[in-house]
Length: 150
Image (cartoon, rainbow, N blue to C red; front, side):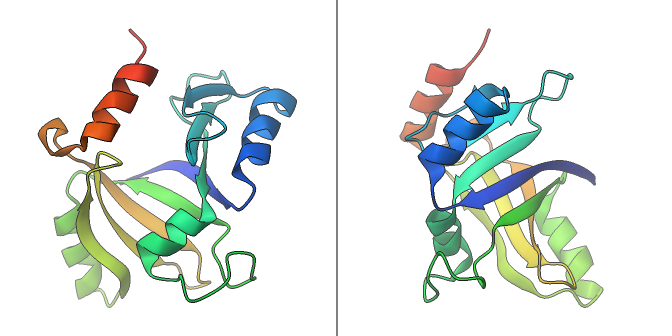
């Protein structure tokens, strides 16, 4: 396992996108101010240093839509941990007593297979693995063509 990047879960996505792009000066690697997801790098060689994601979309994913998105109980960030095999990692961690918020599943719109758990302090962690391009949604394929760099 290796720590992939930090994703901030935000309610004012467009404003945050402009802040990290315009104020902080991070280079965009994916997305725009209306996309609901964007990633940035800081120019020091990392492919992605920081990502932004709509807090409501994340709440939908981990089943917390019963809570208001601006409440303290909603996640404001999560750690992304890239793994070779999501299912095997979930099995290994489950055997160690880890409870998962959401077990392994494909996210065709994101091009990934993922699972969600929390650390002892309640911070959200995503276990992320690549999803074969043949399983990607058409929308993701279109976005990939739009944002792909040669």
